[in-house]
Length: 214
Image 1: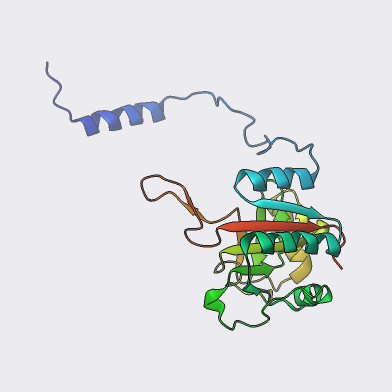
Image 2: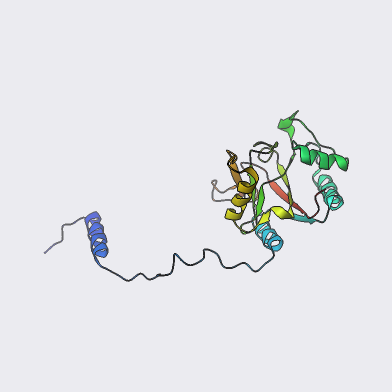
């Protein structure tokens, strides 16, 4: 006898049958299993590996002098002229070494570089956690073609949950209204599946991890 049921009805019939059959759980300990393998690397090494893998640039500096030597090399390499920094702590840091920068948003549409602090560095996936609580706001890490992040070694954590704990310790109940994780330069593959960096934000991301930030 010819079966007159449609393909949709046949699929639904198979689903109902499968739901009625009792099977043993093939993964009984799945919920208790850790999401990631236990990390055995130093956080600095893990973060550098993950950031580099997503086209970011990692630079470790022992102190301020080491930082500025690297900054001068980058400025010469990219021919930077419009460098912006809006956070008072960073402004004092840059001014100490007489490094030129814009303190206001004058001619911001011509900005080539934005220098900001961050809330945390997430070693597990090479991400930079930022918020709108800083004086840099939302624009400085998004608009310029190059984004430079300056972080202390104390801000380096393993996972996102550790980063959120830093925020909790710092702000208490006054958690910032915008928290974002920057994972490498912005990218898209919408056009013919071709990966393009810098489509919706900075084309280059530089993370400076400074051991002695003073």
